[in-house]
Length: 436
Image (cartoon, rainbow, N blue to C red):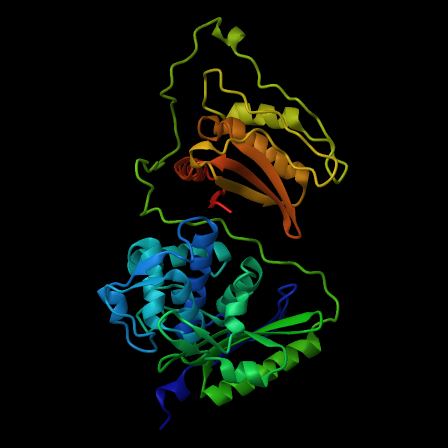
């Protein structure tokens, strides 16, 4: 009679990490138990929270009774203990510690249930359409399911969205604050040339799971296996799949990194002194007073100080953006005008004025675009539409290998949070940018 591990359904997927092209799949969309592959999402959200200033790696997290009581694998945290987030991240990534994963979720969202809701929002934003999370660690729970395809997607986003943290997954051992812990994937990392992660998982219902990535030269392959019969069987099968991937993948291919998802945040947790804006239905009537006849003459249009040319030779359509933003805005009084755009000769950036007083070291991102022109146009439209909260901020286009980020900088944390929530209520993508 087969043990539950041997009887676990098998699924696999192989992709070229550079392009996302599928090189092999089997039962890739079958919903199965992910086990500790779940912790990839827990860590992804932790990295997202740090990037957006919700928490820092040095934040001392208080361990709850619930987190301390999680079954093994665990770090051995005690109820009431305080430990830096960085050590919880290391323990979850390397040791696959269930108590550390739960503590991370509670620190970010207040409770594991709220964190699971954020996990599901993030999964949807990432395109993981067949995944449902119920907890932060991956222990078997009714409805807690995923697929080989979705977990491959998750691994690819970890690699490209947070490369500054990816080295965690290749560490054979690390210090997790209370003790040294060994990597659950150390045998595969040592045995397969070019392997540098990502995450193992095992429960009786799931079998032996692994999402693995390896790089050789300019090629990088990600392979996922669900339902392995043992650690050795799983590692051997993943090695075969990676070999297959390197054989099938072209030597040269255009790098197409996955798109960074919209920032999900914690709607359950708000900054002190702020209010939640909920839009249940479309606004049918403005409650603002209508200007009296003759008052329109006193309203001056916001000046356009510059019509430049972007790096692709397109003329900036400032006038059209101005008209579009003004037609969408509900502000009927003469607004404080956004400062003019300035485009520098080298690595041009759209800037206005900025103050560093009052802790205004925060910012928001309103999207990534394929051209500087599109990013600048979005900044102008957003500044005019949300002028009450964004007045005085710095409008900045940041160029990277992945596109052009449209950012507003020089805000306080409260103002950035309020601006994002107001923009998200208008179906405009927005996430906060923390200091530094």
